[in-house]
Length: 314
Image (cartoon, rainbow, N blue to C red; front, side):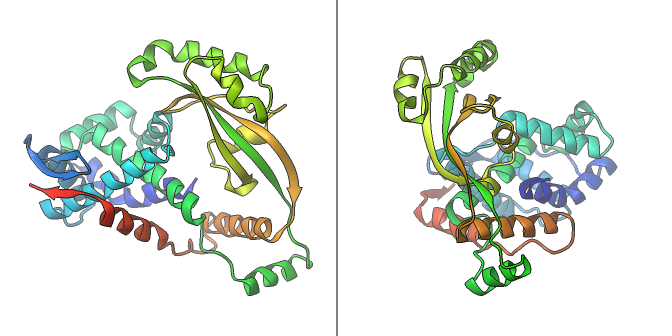
């Protein structure tokens, strides 16, 4: 379970109980703009749904609290979109299905309960999408956890028989066969076939952009150096199982994608050592052996977005 999924599970524990016992009443069917965030409107209906959601969590559910939470969520969603790091709709749907199954309900039953509670499936899934995507953006900017001090790094290496751990360094590109949202249902299968066919013809990273230009609506994004522990969990199995210079394809919110492996090698420098040790700490925290490291970077990032944002209350 990733940190984001773990956070969702913990955050919604109270909500699940409330949903199953019917403690929440329906939200008011109202409309009207309550706030505008960089041109994106937050309506009274949105606020009412968030109030219903907050009541499921047995927490403060006044309109001001709901509005401020939605403003923060909107800023996060806008930043996620700007840097193209959103999870796919498939990932969100899968998380929703696991949440339903964890409460011994089908997706249909959970959807009905959310609708009766006044939250609605779309609002709930929108929340899940941000909770899963935002940590990626924060991690990309600041690193997945606070950096280890030189003393900590040396101490950990001493415990490892004075050897720096070895990990794999990849140089990666992201190849995206773009699918417009309006055509997602109609052409996804065709685009997936085109992406799969292109893998055997991929000429290598140096010629990737020229290669992409020979096809319609295909973009190339340089991801640069990435150590194995840094690879997002939805891509990691495909990278590890790759045969040749491309991974298998995935359908994402942007279209059909695969990663090109420009090069890979084993490394054991200080950065690699730190990354491996941090992954070990994360694995321990998932196993309940220690608490997750405190991460203030999310708040710092959000505060920065708020300062730059144009927020108008109505």
